[in-house]
Length: 359
Image 1: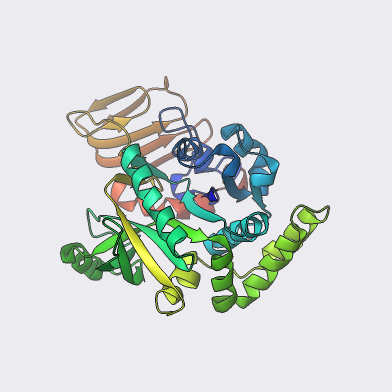
Image 2 (image 1 turned 30 degrees about the vertical axis):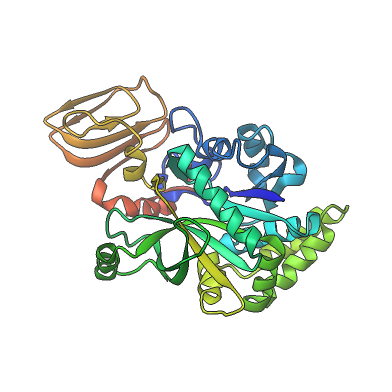
């Protein structure tokens, strides 16, 4: 049976001062009045039924997540007592689903992305499910056509076409966050895709691979699976999960699996517009620009300024900018950020240095 798991963890520090520990980016209603988590859930309509959609996020956000995803039930809530990176989020889902349904096949999605058009997303997701249903040992990743030489994304190289599946390929290798000159080579080669962070796995076979490559993590996930649905469930999760080795799924699972003859990895290219809304420049791209390249979600007044991005938690608070170019301004009721757009990656440094009450 088909399932989905949305990873909604992460602190979103590059989107400070709006994204805070108390209200991280995936729960902020800053994309047309909706949160990224709401949008990610709606994206599954007509693909995976609501009763088979899971969400993995910090347990402290449970009430907020439940409000954002009203159809989410307690049995489909994977509450992390502390974040342990993507391998363990996927392993958590695998452990729960394999116990519930020995034939469970699930797609891993994140709450960071904006993807259009929906029809193409749904079509390629179906191809991913079919690939794993045909061969449960196969892992599937979805590739995005690079539009620039990004150094902050992982890359996957396409191999031979997979017979019987339109525009699906074997994956030759994974490369995580290459240097600028290497990323430029990948862009020009036309055989590399950005690794979207979306995957399809057979739950039981995913757990099996974790037992090979990260046996210490598998041991903890086994304990969680055994306790799931019993009165000891929360106690075991709270005691075991924080002890799991913190590592990404790319490093811990996909890279070793790509070299392992016991596993095959397929890449399904997606012909979609894909935005990873993880920084203020990427958020600004969701807004319409004026003739000078200025974008905002609030009232603004600009004089001799261009390429200004303004975000505010009050749409009627006017922000004015004079004589500046390529600057980001973020205004909240208790903190304001002003930075050059080309230094937006350093916002997380500021977020860690302000008083705890503003983090």
